Length: 212
Figure 1 (cartoon, helix red, strand yellow):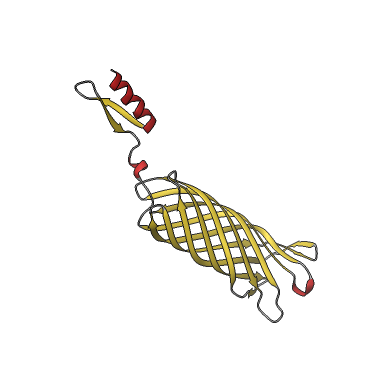
Figure 2 (cartoon, one colour):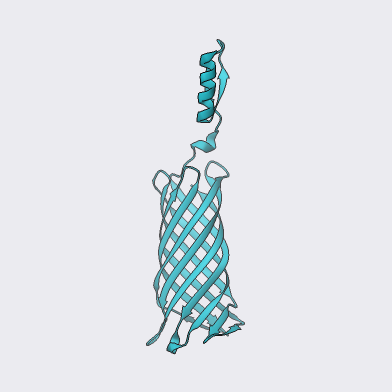
């Protein structure tokens, strides 16, 4: 009896379920299931779709200019595991805002038939915990596009960074569904002579489906 009691207590601490053999002794059988054995390995693919807010600021001719508003964000990372629960990938992500607010010299107006977009491409490193929480960092080459009344303009290429903190739940042996908070920044010089520099930032909540 003492051996059976000790085995039962040990099984409870280790998260396993005891069963009895024919002679009454305890046999420990794992009750955690296949999900507890899963970890991130092999080929990695994670598309995500997010919604949030974006703001871009510059000072052309010494006048403060801000383009801001609600935005959607699409991202896709493709790569593979370099170690257990560590991922290296190529990551494309963007921000797109339709008819954002434009503030010039402190005066704000809604800009109809306009759009703001920021596109980014670069490497991404992701670390997963055993509980499937993750942190991602994506330094990137970025560019801004702006459309106003049918006239389009683009900035020069610049540099940006996206950081994400998320949680995923295994839906099958290879697929996980997740949600994440994302913060992104970018610095881009506008095109042209003596052009101002745009500083952009955005925050989104994103939903993802990960194959790994």
